[in-house]
Length: 261
Image (tube, rainbow, N blue to C red; front, side):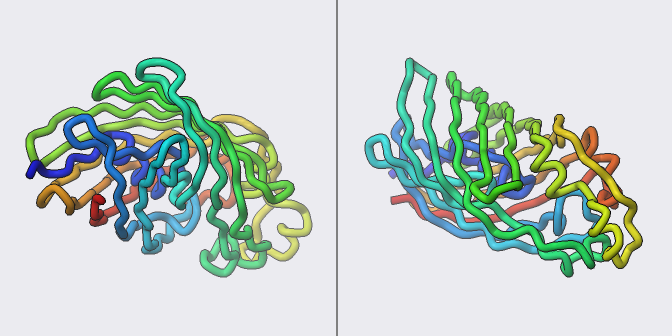
């Protein structure tokens, strides 16, 4: 039996989780898509721009039956429908969940409101000729005032053999004014309650971050594989200038194991 090899889309999804990115995860073996489930752990900032880190469990799941799929979106499992537009072109829509932020988890956010765990929905389009993939994904928070993001991502399988695959990628994320104000803005009432003495700050829409990452997948056999991702993300625009931003550039990492079925 031949070993399982994950595609660059699956690898990019692991990186997307850790850098608050979105993606379209797939698994392939000799050109055939495979379903899988697994678990990993990631080391990421408490929030984008924080100098404090946390370990986060990472659920890894990819399932597809006809047009229906379950796969990661912004680090959490989402489900939706996808359709082939033409050779190498895929589009779809999904519903999922978005991570929040506890105000007491970091020194700079103490005294501010929590950002709740919330529902999301969105759509994507992907072009994936061979080892190269480009995806654009729009994600809207279902909670009023939490805003929306647009992700642009490119990944490339740089090297592979019968048991290993190494991919590299880059991602940039645009966010609307509601998203930027939720995560990086400080209202007058929040400034008054801030234990860190934050100044009032209004964050406008614009490109929020840029990330680069690399992922190595090693197959133990045709069922089991390990995935490791390392990357760096840097904030841009109003996110970089926010008083909540303690560190403009953060590293992120993830390791996990999956079982294909």
